[in-house]
Length: 140
Image 1 (tube, rainbow, N blue to C red):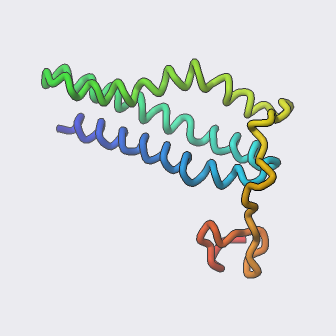
Image 2: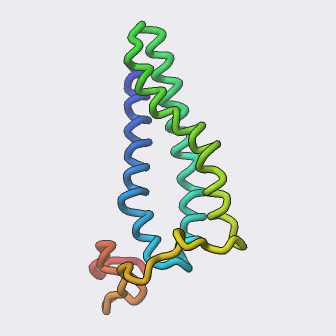
């Protein structure tokens, strides 16, 4: 039972982290090209170990549980989450390394288009945006 909880929680953390980055964080930092590179580097260094460890723990817990219960369906979920590790290492790593290289010039598809919405500072918090839900409560 504990292995099922571990596998489920790590899969949920993995999926939740991926959704947050894809839907909220990445679009927010891509509104300005100059700071996007620096923010991506900081974000990636913090997120990669968490995502990778969640994927590996989920895979191991699901495979162990599948062997102990002889229910092969559990291993499918573990393999689906665990497949992100080799995909990241072999496919995404070269892309991420290029983005983390401060000397590499941005290509045309890595720049923000001219018609992209800009983050506007609010009067009550210069440098902050109401888009992030601060509404006067953001730290300076």
